[in-house]
Amino acid sequence: MQTPTNPNVRGDRIRDGEGARHVTQKILITVVAGGGVYLLTNVVGPSEEDGPWQLVLSVLCGGIVLIVQFLASFVSQLGDLRESVDKRFADIGEATKLFTEVEKLRGDGVPRLAEHATKVVSMGPDILREFAHSEIDRLAAQMEDFTNLSAECAGENHDWLLTLTKCARSSIDAISTTVVDDGFWNTEPAGRYLTAQREAILERHISVRRLFIVKRPEELAALEPICAEQREMGIQVQVVALEELPLFLRRGKMIDCIVFDGVLSYEIHADQLSVNTSTTVNARADEVQPLIRRFDQLWEAAAPGTSPNGVPDSVRLRPDAS
Image 1: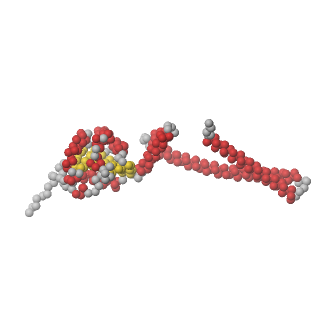
Image 2: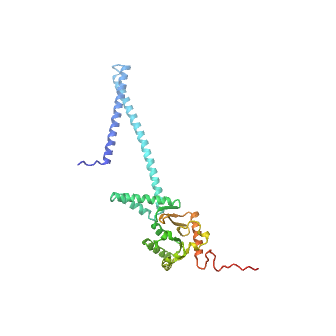
Image 3: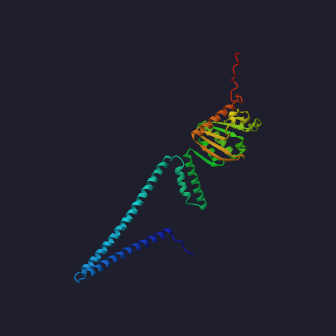
């Protein structure tokens, strides 16, 4: 059985062979130059007295040629060394810049991520390393998207939902439609989501409001157990039927969205078959503010004591004086 050759050893042997060839080439050029000078001096001025000087001149010229070759080689190597040093300093500069940026995140998980990522990519089976590389690439792409204040993923991302709930510090306002939420509240992710909201209410005193929107009034009864459970957890809940809303509130998209702290939205998009196709997290103010205004309008329209057109029942038109 043939023993595999170490690539580093093979590379060293190749470099040693090239160095020996260069030295041999320099010696041959020197010998040829010296011999040429000796022959030339014999042809131009052949003399028995000049014999020793011809030999000395040949050796001197050959030595000069050899020195020139070594100087040229030294200059070339010096240029390569300079390029290598410049590259090393550039790498050091990039590493220093990266370390400075990481230092800002010392309290976060970035140093821990870097430490364990370097470990996992050098251990375990190939599929684990490939999976680790893919996860790192996915996270890097997601962070790059966040620099544009928006990110999107396929399907419904429950991890984003839970993490945002745990990160909220003031308010959570949610619009839930039967198109997207059908069957969701009886699932395991829904249980974790409600638990995270209850902890946010009790521990951080966050205001959580949820508005359920159904198509027809007869669908309201099916939501009563869900609403009762969430109200017991401290969530403010209201239900409204689209048919009871004024026409101006029925216009436009009726999508599931959650606004966290009044600055970031979590939106779920469904296709014509009511399948959740994508999730978007958005912190662009010009796109989040319309969602906040729409939620406030729908919440006010669904409030008890408010007529279907959104006007409080306590407001009455003054009778005609005439």
